[in-house]
View 1 (cartoon, rainbow, N blue to C red):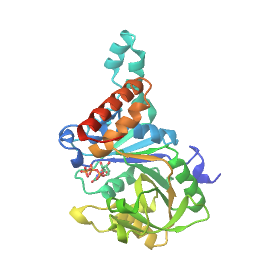
View 2: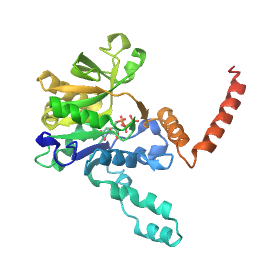
View 3: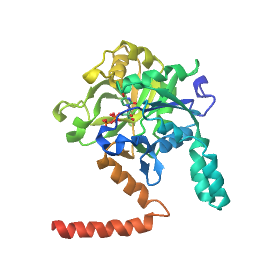
View 4: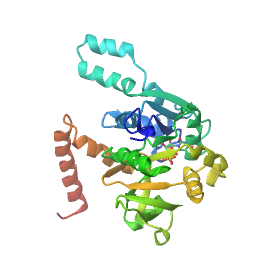
Length: 309
Ligand code: UTP
């Protein structure tokens, strides 16, 4: 085992969670409720991410928050009065739900004064890393990647190849215009590709592949220096993609792990609703009744729309 992988088994100590965006695709809900607190069934996205971070052995959750989004951090408080009241009423299951977030991982918050881009948000985390942390993870809280083994595979590639490792998903070519698309070369392992470039939201005919970026990154510490050297792009925002592209140009190793599995985008209602259906159907308490309700809703909808089975 290399030195880096001592400590937690994968060597990941800090997971950076950028949560300072405006959530404009989820208005009006996000006028007052941070997107990261919207629940999937009953659990906010930020807690799902804390759980994923803890599951890869990370001990620190560095949450980038906006001045008006402090409620996101409050989710990790202990709520002693609530626990006491619930305990006195014998509601042990609910007590477990209240205390869970506070026990998963050590959260720290870093304020991003203005939403000046994902790159700027990630750059702010430099100050919380220990000196010996040569790399760290980034998990976007509005992206659910299932199964959560993606990061484990990425850490193994980092241990083998060094540099930065990202997570890629295959999408139909005509959908590539929605994503950051990787230009890749094959490696010996069919699930791992060397990244030679990245294009943000290309026209499908210009897309260098159908492998697109998801919200999971394992970044070498050199990313901070790259972030200081890139210029702001559209809307004055510093793009993380541009800093990764700079590292690639300078010959730093960047690989992607092609993830086989599911992904849910919680950042807009079109992705959030299916995520709730997917998790809800698998929930032992709500699943069976939800399945019946969905079947009924679907058959009513099909009758209304004249959809033949
Ligand atoms: P998104 O673009 O998906 O989130 O950024 P957003 O800006 O909140 O959403 P829309 O587009 O307005 O609907 C990806 C992640 O990066 C964070 C967001 O909070 C989200 O988790 N982010 C984005 C920051 O932390 N700071 C920024 O300046 C921009």
